Length: 333
Picture 1 (tube, rainbow, N blue to C red):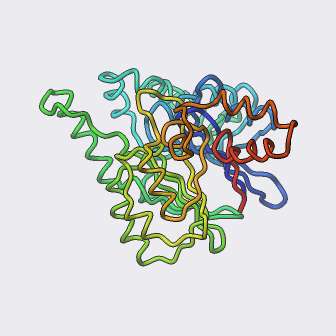
Picture 2 (cartoon, rainbow, N blue to C red):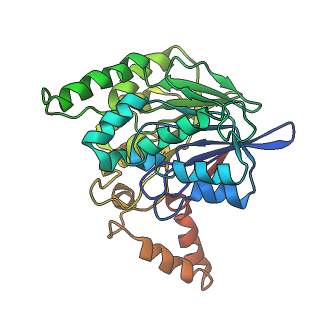
């Protein structure tokens, strides 16, 4: 099994690959499009004709922005999506779009596409064969090389979003509901190895998961840091409580986003102090500070190092030193 975190600036696009009966299989979690759509490019380049699953972790733009283009490509190129899962519903989507369209741009199109697909049910030209709502109540899914467990969101917490959003729209509450509550926490298990994919899950999710894992034997071989390393989603006690391999990779999906400036240096440093090995898709903000680099955004430095890699072995080592902090990151299990 291979897990690849695509470099999509600040956002998530995760590709999971495995073999079943000597046939290559693929599943996707989120699909962000910044200046390009690397998930779509991967599907096109590798002439993939069947996607086992697509999961949209929650309704934030940097996790679903490329999904409509991917749907259209699949429809136009006879690519089958066997199952699509998501954590949010139509009513919330439309209300969310009305008060915050910039963040919800594309969600209406998402459900409009699903409505169109539902009319093609059982037809040969139906692109999405099955769609379903996803929460911690969803049963585990088994594949040939791994099992997928859904730990979050909790159903009753997502139901509370509707009430909170209604009060906000009625001007009863000034604060907007936290749509990160919809975020998935997904555990992949293979043999005795576990991988934790956390999307933008809130801090309280990890507080409750401390008890969950206290009664379950897990050996973590890879974790994804939630919400691109935001301090608001950082529950240090959880990361201290879990059992992990030495130098367990901790993945930050980050990019140049001046508004958010993620990841926070405190999160990066504390995760590293707990014995995790830091990986990221870009050297920005907290990653840059952690590496003791002068510039907050150092892509020009990386390009400069790469351009002189042939000159001396020392500089080649310097270039290789940064490969785990920039670009697509792949992990094999």
